[in-house]
Image 1 (tube, rainbow, N blue to C red):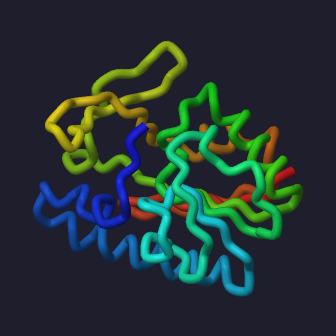
Image 2 (cartoon, one colour):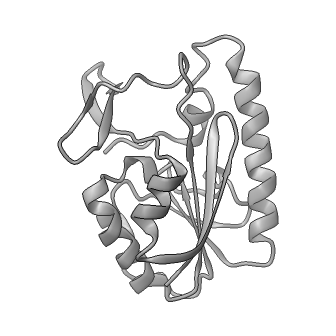
Length: 188
């Protein structure tokens, strides 16, 4: 799975003039909401670009590069909040439940989980290239050597998020902006 770093993510929509300023404003609002939600918490951020503090959406967060659910470290004790930054949309449906169970086993019951990801914006978001039998959608990305590859990328509705997560989390709250969505919940 290919993960883009935050600089790449912030520039993802720049091919469509007029959207980049709206996207930047949305990202500023998401960051402000994250600051409010994580104040006073010990935060682990997964999906941190290159894994350094400069890649964190949450200042002071411990950053871990996790490009697949299997990449999440086994020892994650001491954190009361986990932020998945632009990662959930790349976790295939058939891996989501195991991912949440594994995360709970690593950080414990009642940890705050915050998911941040992209909204689908017509004419601006990457084109969905195909949908598989499990309902996962994919788009094409170009690697560093110009080679094209398929990458999972979903744009879930509120009801789909609630349905997929409800057996593993509680207290689900979802906020949406034009370019992003943010979900908060507690691990069961």
